[in-house]
Length: 601
Image 1 (cartoon, rainbow, N blue to C red):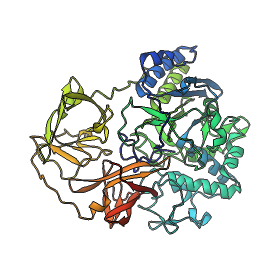
Image 2 (image 1 turned 180 degrees about the horizontal axis):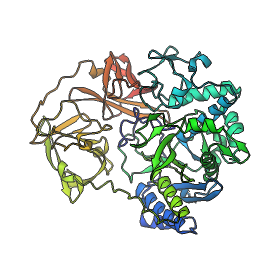
Image 3 (image 1 turned 45 degrees about the horizontal axis):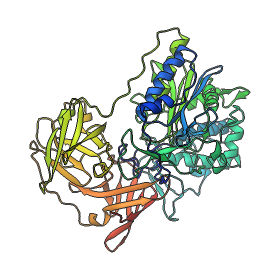
Image 4 (image 1 turned 30 degrees about the vertical axis):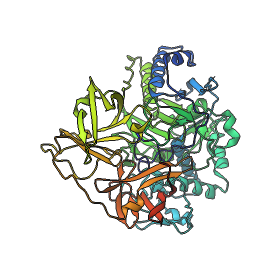
């Protein structure tokens, strides 16, 4: 699985993110990597300069990123070079990660789905350019913008919303396209759920048996499971997630064990080990060739690894193939993907030109993936093969530091003369609160979050800038998840405002409207909603500067109580407020998932 952009309103706020669990943690462990814990953290034995460099980097990376444990698999085109494990599979019990612990690989599963379907193409069972409704006519799809082919689903270009699951609780609900297939890249877990159903139909057996026979057994991936179930829980590392699921989550925040997971959705239902993932990566390095024969024909592998459409969510240079991103690294063609689950985060890099590959997974979900680890690993391995100077380790940014911290300093007031004050010390920003200074963590753009539990951690501090050459800010609130003026290549204007949830403050540089009118019916929509699904959590709807917001992102009204989640007019993901009773909406449906209003404050 992967966190959909439309649902992950902000990487700053862990509440209500699809694919980030909000399960409670009665046995919660405050996990902060102290010097003593780092010294006690289990480490593999390094034998080569590459291993020493990589192990040293991973130790620092895990400490900086607050990772409980990490598993690693390295391979070239002929053999597994190394499997290693770091840290703890169970922090409470101090059980070290070993190389047989299962880690959930999330959306890397999508490449398995693609290979299974390409096998079926090789067998003459499937035409990639045929509309999926020709194969599965009962799918609840409203294809108003055009037929959706298997190719469109494999490349995230179908126009469908990024829902979790194919079938909605409302029997009459339909999955509605937002754009003509092929026009845009829109990451869509739903599409790969549909492809899993297609694989089951064409193979006449459940996905777990299909992937076992077609991929896992031929590649000798004996430890891997095709679906996540209670039966394999005893072999799995404990996964961790944010303890405070209704607050923003700082890098060194408190973690708690995630819930038990049972999942057969083919958007991300595989759990594996580093040794098995090295075998899988080796097959990709060999263009579909396994130890006992081809998994797919060379022609089908070429189809899988073709860059069909730009995929900026992976990198500025990435495109998407079939179930995997196609990119460049140091001039080499690579295949890459990440996976984000409720309590696991994974990454794979396959350097097709360099002949080396790396897989890594962390047993926690904190909004990042171990991409830096796998990228550095393949660079080290290639340099070693070529007898070149070892590349420098990538920098690990300190989120408490930002070069332009002084831009945000000063006092901001709202219409009721309440004040927010921000102070700077070097390149660090602090919130001044009743004589205390609370360190703020920079997330992206002009956005910061509190590093201290309490009232200041309920929302993201979203600063707004005036247009260049003007002291007037735009009338629309800045988005916590979108790029702010501070991310623009143009010289940014001065900071003139800051929002904190529904509260809005301005400084002396601001000159613009100070009152805003929102539609009266928005009053029925505002409030706190919660889904008890492991993938759900909390959602907070409020009005800011006349606009309806959902966890820091502006909603765009389509009609009535239906809103578009993204700024793009073609965005298919929606939020809908339902069941208005006594002046309040009682259900909020976000990308097909229902959240119920709660009154707890």
